[in-house]
Image (tube, rainbow, N blue to C red; front, side, top):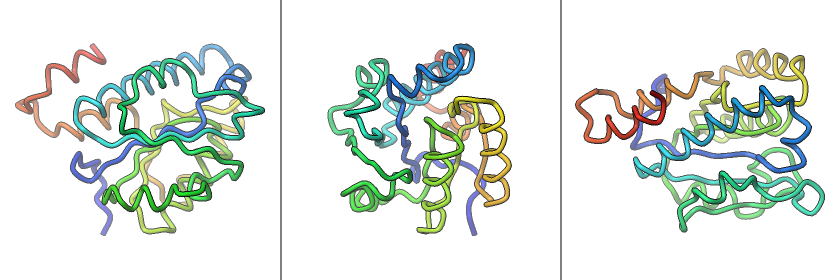
Length: 186
């Protein structure tokens, strides 16, 4: 049975396609929220030793990963280029993910109705417990975002927010990293 809670020992964090040309097409208010929450999750993952993976969709046409992500990636972070919409289709991605030996996947990025949706469903079909962070994903328009949430629910994908991930990873205010992590949001 799938654990409904994110577990720090079982988690890896995947940031999908947060690239310049894609994010420039998303409304300012929405992309600011995504950037803020993705940065919080990335900093928490680094602090708590949760492995991070990034993907880039056709970087020649859509640009590089945004600087705020690249500047905060650990040297061990793998980035996978892809043209397929699901991250599982990127060369070497599944082998790398399997080598991490983590069964829970925390997803953030763009676009919710395309790459996030297809990645979430395929990861679930591959046997992973998938958690989509709804305040760290976006689409170019709200209808597409809403459609993605509806379809993710229908696929029994876990939907949660940034703070839920952080406090489920910590599980207790007595955690040695509680003050560091709580400062990311307060």
